Image (tube, rainbow, N blue to C red; front, top):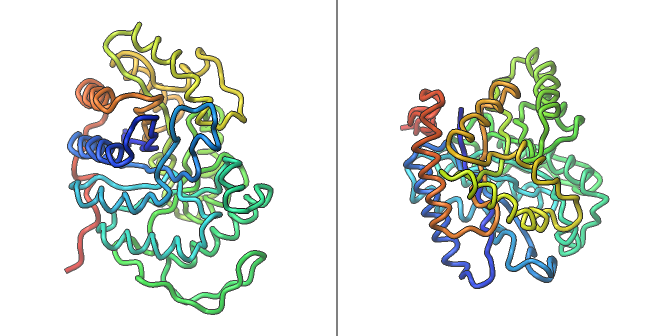
Length: 351
C-alpha cells in the first residue's frame, strides 16, 4: 500500500501562522524520511471565525497550496506533492495550468494535481460566485485546464470563458503529456468523465465500501478498454487517523474530536455518530490500524490511503508521535516494494 499525509494547516487560536507552517514542514520532512508516498495540501479561503463563529481558530490557512509546495520540495528528497484540492472554480483555469506546469518543472515532476469545485458556502460568497453554478463552472474549467496543461495551442468558447488561440508556458517537461490529474468527486457522472479522460479519482473520508467498489468498477469498465491505467493507486482514499498504544486513549480522542469534524464540515452536514465514524476512520492501537488498513485493501481494493493525522486540534508533538508510531509499527506490515524509495523517486531529469 501507499501511504500519504493530508495537510490542512488548521490553525487554532493562540497558534502563530508562521509557526504552524514551520511545524507542518517538520511533519512533512518526517513523512519523507519514513517513506510516505506523498503530501496532499488543502486549499482554503476565508475559513476564520467570521465564517465559523463557534470555531476556536481557522480551518486551513493555505489559500495557495503550491506556494507551500515549493517550500516542501526544497526541504525534502523525494515525496510527491498533491493538492486536495486545487479549486478551479475560484481561479481562472489557465492560471491554474501555468501554476501547475511551473511547479511540475521546478519540482522535477513531483506534482499530483487534485482538483475540485469546493463545497463551503462562505467561500462562494467571498468570491461572489453562485454556489449553484459550481458544477457547471467546474466542468468548463476542467476542460480548459486539461487543454492548457498539454502545452499545445488551443482556443475555447464556453459559457464562462472565451479564449482566443493561446499556448501556455512553460510546456510539460517531466510529466507527459501533462501532470497527473485527480478529480475529488463522488458523482457517478464525473467518475465516468475521469475514466474517459485518464484522470485519477480521490474519495472522501466518509466514502463507504459500496461507493468505493462501485467507483472502481465504473471506472475500470470505461478506462480499461481505452488502454488507461486502472491500478488501485489511481483511486486514493482519504481517512482520518488516530493511533495510540492505549486503546482507551484512542477511543477518548475520537469522541472528544467529533465537534471538530462537525466544524470542518461547516455546520451544514450531519456529523455521523462515533461508532459509524470508527468504521470509516483508522482509529486505535497499531494492531487495530493494521487490521483496518488490511480490510480497506482487501475488501475495498484500496492501495493508496491519504491519512489525516491531525483530526482535531492536536499539538505538533502529538502529530509527530503518531506518525513515528505509524511508520514503526504499521507500515512494515505492508508490501515493502510499494513503500520503497524507488517508487517515490520523481521521473528522471533529462540531461
